[in-house]
Image 1 (cartoon, rainbow, N blue to C red):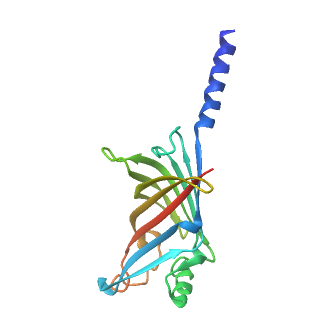
Image 2: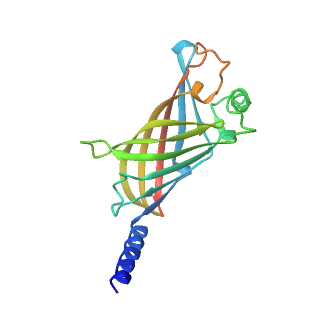
Image 3: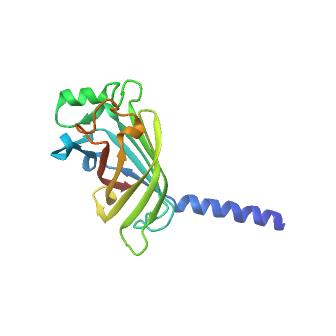
Length: 195
């Protein structure tokens, strides 16, 4: 009898955990996944973004305002890269850069999301970024801008920043850093809706 009670208790615990997990989806019409790099030795900047991206966030607590321990999964379509100049965008999709024909998507999956000690809004996000078939661990900073109840349910907003080296992903290896910096600044504004 005790054995069956233990099994029932464990089953109830897993059921409760499943209920408590929260699912959020990115609102692509109010989000931007962008990047910035220095041009010609830093005399100017080039900015770009990906026109088609999708992300989900899964939380593990009861509060819709606490994203500590959340899991993020993001995918972006490399063929939608937009730097404001069509010829450059086409070039970036080529095999010397993103090689979109072989690697049409870039992905990010978090391995941890932890609230910065002493902060109510800032999180450190660690995860695996895959681009051009290469996966590297990256660290990002996410600022939780807050939550509101919108037309389609509860909405949360984030500002996400970080940096990577394009050479780590074999993107544009033949391009001198005097023309385009190796460091790429990541900047995203994301709205997510509770499902």
